[in-house]
Amino acid sequence: MARLVYCLLLYLASPLVWLRLFWRSRRQPGYREHLAERWGRYPQPAPAAPLIWVHAVSVGETRAAQPLVEGLLAAYPDHQLLLTGMTPTGRAAALQLFGAVARVRLAYLPYDYPGAVERFLRHFSPRLGVLMETEIWPNLLAAAARRQIPVLLVNARLSHRSARGYRRIAALVRPALQTLAAVAAQTGADASRLAGLGARHIHVCGNLKFDVAPQPELLALGQAWRQALGRRPVWLAASTREGEEALLLDVLKALAGAWPGLLLVLVPRHPQRFEAVAQQLAQEGLACQRRSQGLPGREHQVWLGDSMGEMAAYYRLADMAFIGGSLVPLGGQNLIEAAACGCPALVGPHTFNFSQATEDAIAAGAARRVRDPLELRQTLEALLEDPDSREKMGQAGLAFWARHRGATRRILDLIRSDLPAAGR
Image (cartoon, rainbow, N blue to C red; front, side, top):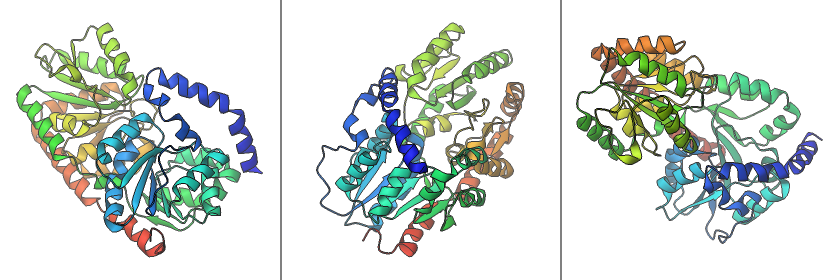
């Protein structure tokens, strides 16, 4: 009954779905492309070889899936792999990572309409499905169960806030979770919350993001930037969100008196906001250079990172980094990449999306938490004056990253041991 009501609401919301696609396409024209795929209609021919399907909703999940995709390609050399997503930026990231790999197909996962997900599964006929993080789609999972396609939820995370929201629709979520063949949770806390919602066959496998190594060419690019800028102090604001830039620019202005050469590298989380942030910088009267226009000069106070897929280079360049989404109540962003690049990380009070990784990084000495913009300014000042502390934090980050790797191997072992027939 709960799923019937859910389906009725989906159909009633159809005009809003089209409107949302149109609205988002105003800033991201990619939302107008491959529209038929969002309703389960694919122009590409059905696969001739057996196929494993991995779903990663957007950029972060796609990059986190990289070691698992590579592991599956190596473990099942006679299979193709389908990588689905939901956003143009996620698809662009997938194309960047796997566009040259002949055995990897890219497509959008359709919206969770019964007919659309049936068409998707009928067209691709996957032997195994792997959903990244918290992608719980009731109709999709029900259709996969009817077709006896085993589906795993991997790198699964569930914050206390999200769990509370899911409990309100437990009649819909519980049956969906119970169809899963297995769940590979990031932490014990995630496992406990998922079990409370009805998930079974749960294994704690760690976080796949620890298995993503920074690309050497990006580290080399960041090092080249560092050499070009000389000894100028640089702090990075990584993956910032709406409403956060104004706070960070106030911090920059407060620091400018004592550190006149200080450069802020500002990288918004979403590319559709690049232009708006550039306009905000102009309104604030700050001298800004855009990454797309070249390196900043001595006269520039801000270097706007209007590029995709270069975060490791920014981390290698910076003396320290603030991790965005955490000064405003949006749950923060992933700090693991900063640790993997040896960059000291600062986070705000709101990190519920990555709570365990953040707390572990703080405990390891790789990150520090600040309560508000004032404490952020004070901490930045202290670290600017203390290169030894920055070096210790960077080394602690590298050790923290290395210590937590191995989720890919554990998930592949789970596929082989618990689902020996899947993918064969």
